[in-house]
Image 1 (tube, rainbow, N blue to C red):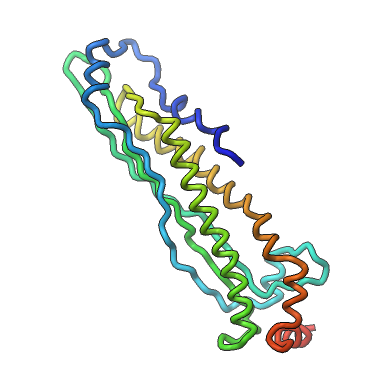
Image 2 (image 1 turned 60 degrees about the vertical axis):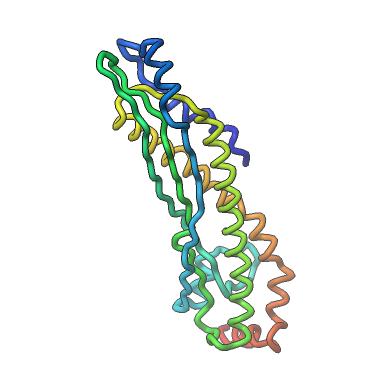
Length: 230
C-alpha cells in the first residue's frame, strides 16, 4: 500500500478556519521570513522482546487459527504498534494582527511495544526443539522490524511532502490539538495497516515445507512431543 492516498490530509485538516480577519500582506511576509523551517521527523525506537513460556501448543494453536488442517502452533510472535508524538511550534505574534503565525516541529517515534515471542511450554529451554522454534520466531521478529523501518521512512517522506514549509495562522493551542489528532487518527492507522500487510511475508516463513521440516529436526524431538499430546 502506497501512502499517496493520505498525503493531502495534513494540509486540509490543518488549514486554518475562516477568520474574520486575514493576515496582512506585511505580516504574512514577515512570518515567511522569520519563522524557522518546518521540521518533520519519524523515527523508530527499539523495544525489548518479551519471551513467554506459559502457553501450551494447544493454547498457541487456538490463538493463531492455522489454515492447514491438523497443523499445530509451536511458537507465536505477537506485536502491537507503540507511538509517541512530540510537538513544538515556532510562533510569532504582533500587536494589531489577529492571528498568530507558526511552523511546526514534529517528532513521531514508532516502536513495536510489546513484541512478544512465545515458544510452547512443552519444549524445555535448553532443548534442540526450543532453539529451533525460537530461531523460526526470530525470523518473524525481523520481518516486523524491517516493515516498521520501511513504514517510518515512507511516513517521513509523505509528511514532509504534505507539510512543505507552509506557515499556519490561528491559535497555537488549537493548531497543536488539530495536528496531534490528525497524526493519531490518519497517519498512525496507516502505519498499523502496513504492519498487517506483512502477512504475505510471514506466510513465506510459515510454509507447509517448514511445518514438514519440523517433524524431522532435532532427531524427531518435536514430532515425539506432539505425538505425546494426542
